[in-house]
Image (cartoon, rainbow over all chains, first blue to last red; front, side):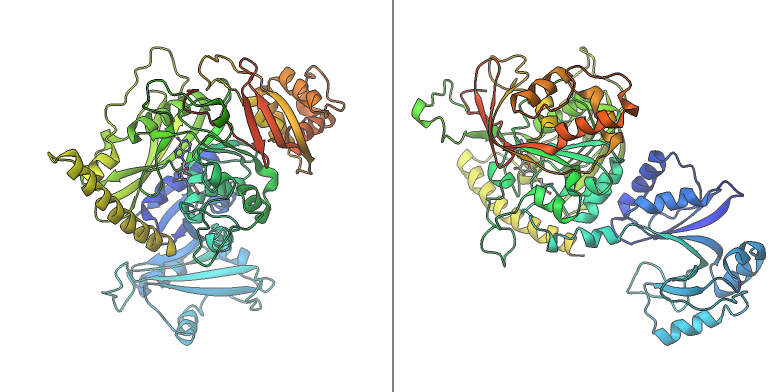
Length: 467
Length: 124
Ligand SMILES: C[S@@+](CC[C@H](N)C(=O)[O-])C[C@H]1O[C@@H](n2cnc3c(N)ncnc32)[C@H](O)[C@@H]1O
């Protein structure tokens, strides 16, 4: 359906603002959609774009988690007068396609940052009486849903009398925010302490451009939240984790109200709950620092949230003993000892793994923890085969944040590629500080800090995910 | 563990093991369940498989059925064939058993469908 370009309003949820542009760009690239941006204020929950294809706009809406609705824009302005003037200038012929005596309709009124009663909203609708509305009202399932939006800014403490911007148009499609509710952790069969909230998990799947029939891997899979999200978009999912008890759902239950784990708790059971069992391949207990996959194994995307060493240990199998000996009779029941797996090394491993195992153009989408004060772009992990294409921040506390990094594999690794591990600062070293204290002092201080940080972190995560 | 995973898996993490492929399967329990057929996925995954390994693995656990020993040509359009591959890759699952390293004989247990590839600290 290629036609003359039309204006569309993208109306967003005011949440995870820093992730918006990256998400829409990622979706447009995935579907090879080109739109022209007319207006894209940094912080405001709306953009105006131009496109000659309604199908293209619908495709964006069919994937976007940040997007609430997409509207064919018939008029807008900075005052009521401007809005009505622009609406009256809109070609009647275009309106008539959707407004005539055969089309049932409804009008949705949305006010951003200011509350109005139902009666007040109906009054607002009456100001549009000059529109050629002839069909019957149908609130449930109208042929045409019209949308009127008044935008009162972002600051709930200084709400103006009159809206800053007003929009009117025809609803084309809603975004995918219903998936956030569908995948809620509150009703999910199996969750862990570090389960990623559904909204961010789904955004990650979009950053990874997960498509029907893609092979997706999460090497730090935990309770599998990222695989659940990827499977919603047709990704076939594989996961690995070092924690045997986690994959077998034998860790302490993560819900306070729950005393013991259910018998059928597992990542597989979550997939079943959401009707995506067919997209679940396997999870395996493995240590990421050691190779288990065939060297020519290729995946379409790697989506992961590596351990930061705050809520869970960053560790790998190993020992500092020079010649470890395990008695024969202990071998079967032996739980391997673990050594610290430094964050910088882990990211070097992760990027090099991605460079080796992604298809060309395949994406690595991962979280990277940061001490905000010390942030600099150059600090981010890098690899000659991977191009950083998006970097969105989620602030966790005054001092800390995590960034969602999206890399695209641009070429296969060569033997003489330089290994660059110098610029990744160990988050925890910075996080816990280090001075000239004795080792013992430092250890005690760290233990205290760790406990405090953990508490803050959890509080933060909770308030971040509760919304 | 599905045979798709088995096809990608090695034991090269073991000290002294260089290839570690393919792993032998000792299956104690096998489950066969129905999985939605997605011809696009199967057609895309076939070129990534080691066919001989898949066939041998299927045979060793008694599920080779009518799977041809060599990969057929022009499989993209051959729905009948794609369905057979779909079945062996995704519908047959080893629930309990062991994977064996072809070089060292080291056992990796599979419990409740989940292979445990972890090593002891003296093996890395
Ligand atoms: C932040 S959590 C991932 C949470 C996951 N996204 C979820 O939704 O539950 C990080 C995971 O990495 C695992 N892990 C830590 N060190 C590892 C290693 N060396 N190899 C593999 N997994 C490891 C931990 O057991 C933990 O489950």
